[in-house]
Image (cartoon, rainbow, N blue to C red; front, side, top):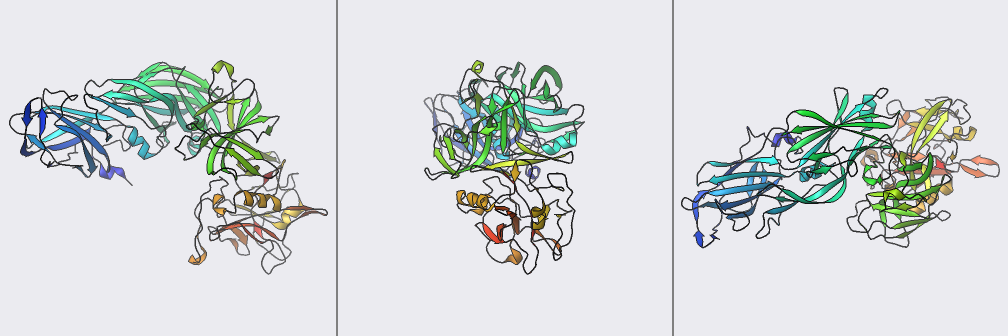
Length: 635
């Protein structure tokens, strides 16, 4: 939706409302104040055309404003003529109830704020609690993080509108990425680096009379809003609304997740003031793993001035879960001096001993390249608002089953690795190891060419998160590209030029080793283990948009909670790439005494089947095998 259609800047915005109030009499000290017959009319706008609102222009449909009014000379903390009236914008400002000016010559002082709080001010107080959202990546949360105030004093009874000009009372950080020599700006844009402001207070008290912000609390990580765009050989577009506060390198930083690597840029000593925005320019390079940050200030949305420097790199003592996008893989590895010491997985947890069926972020110790699946710490249960995080996950690798113990904490936003290798959630930094974090992917090198594959953990199994794209066997022997199917079909791979999907006929699997080193084409037992763990719910594997054949049948559910990313890419038939959007199929390769064999049936997922489908490996009515995709499993 183009929200600009619903908005106007202050110069053109005039919301006229005849606020007709029901009979209301307030007692101010010992005087009875009666209402007149003159309605109060308002116009509302945001000071300056540039703002921290999502639309960067003004209010949008559904926004609610809180309004107070007192007789001029009367404190807001004592008696109020209008007490926290809610006004909702829907093309015009719509009040929740009606009110009039007071009779006679009495004037009013107005104070308005956004966003509206139902509790308003306590009796005898002029202080509102304010907060910003920790995940500002959605338009709703970014908008809810803004806080604006407008005042208008000594307004006498009149048919003229009361003009409320709102000012931003919080501060905004804007991030600019400057690629260094050797970095490709367009590739950086495609990778969409994730930005997190770490260690900033997210709650405070705001005095509506003095404008003072006090009692800052709840330091947390804040995920930035906005979309990247190219501007003058840089990337711009990410921003974070924060409570005005003092920031320094010991407590605050900007964290960047870029191509599976986690970069940290400490914030130099600055005071973030109300109604200001600061631009953080970060020079970034993957080649030397370093960052250089320059912080500039824009006062009242005006002129930018360079203020301070900062430096950072891949090394960190704190691992922040909010910085992990899992875009490039569902698994990260944590390294100390080049050695893997822990593994973070975004995975699907389902246990027989506990009522859990949830996507979660779990960290496991790693020793000698082996992940200890009996000692998982559940950092977060995705989408769970109750304090059930911080539990444990212990896996039986032979049975592929989970023993789960629920936690009792809020989501764990950061953790550490102790010098003894233990995963801890609260510590003295002197007791921790300096580590770096990187995506865990499969690098398949053939004929001096490397292909990276994202990975995902399902139960105790590790799978490729995408289809195989090999054009030669593991030993380097070329595989011929084919386009047609014939009886006694030749070995080969089939490639959809339009979509880049790779398919293989069964004969190709039998001729040589297609799987990357340390991996294999799954056996029937592997698929059955997955099927049992997921309780035969194919929806947990499916991603994207699936369609029925000619509208027949019932469309089955799609959730992809495992992160397996099974898209309906179709298969190859005699006439080419067909039935995409309806199905996908994966090869199975079993081991028998005589060697490798393709079983009579392999695995398929279809738009109308809620369960795993095992169907014929051989093409119907033909003497050759089907042409479908390959997903490999770790040995």
